[in-house]
Length: 426
Image (cartoon, rainbow, N blue to C red; front, side, top):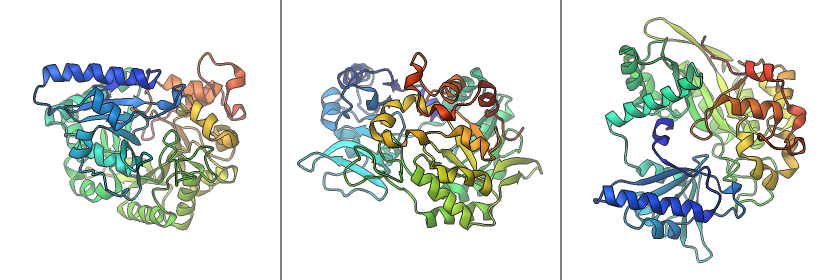
């Protein structure tokens, strides 16, 4: 995803609704000139409307006017929402009278017409319709991603939504001496059986490792789909506390599947409701391991966490000690605080003291680098580790005053923040 995002139109520095559409119109003109067939999709990402003075989504009609003759899709910066024009909706099999899919929301206007803004499972229907990369494009995207991450100092990469073809591409690069980092793969849980069946053809225990499976317990803050214990100030209609994507029982089932398979489970959980649900599920599965020695066909072993919660951006005080008690790794990206300042203040003013309670987690027994570990979450946010150091230490954007810090009581020293970046299997 990172490698492909490097080729997209980025809207991260757009300051307004109008500016974003002007860029879309400009790219559409270029594509119309270079691809007269209209088959190539217009793809843009990094849309973050919460940073605008008037935070409103572009719509299907906006995109139809800017790009009428080919499918056009804008991905929100968190990838949990998309805006699609009429040709893209049509190509995705989405019709005007369709009901919201399970775990998804299709925004409608006052007349009940689709606006083209789709969240979670509905957004995935569009994303899955985007033409797949060719084999040469896949290899080029993977190499571009790894080279960019290497330039920032990353020696280990965890792909937390690994497609089924990725292991083979990485094994090829490793055999050719072109893979410098160690890569741990976490395919979606439903694709784990295939990954386990094929791992012997690409997993080597040294450079390419099948570490576990991935599930989503909730959505994101900017989409207001992160699962909260208390309502948002301005919630999405019908979803006052966000959008739970799995029940505790379903999470428990996922833990049992991965434990039986001898691999770990990574769970996307941003809101305090989702974090609690994962911890509750872990408490019910007594046999789930804290850490796993993942052995390959060659006999090599790599240590991977049995359960890791990704993001944990809002954590209730009652749940902080449960991470260490249950052996759950808290895998966070403090840099998200920098991107989420506006939505945190606008939607969760009553929970700002629970944003990324890093100091509390360490004090409660999470060890830096293993119990509490930092990562990049690229391409959702940029991969520069200095962003997470900035957020963990100063709790505010560069140039912002001390009074603008969010959760200053949770600040870490720079040396402690540095120690939370750690290559798990070294």
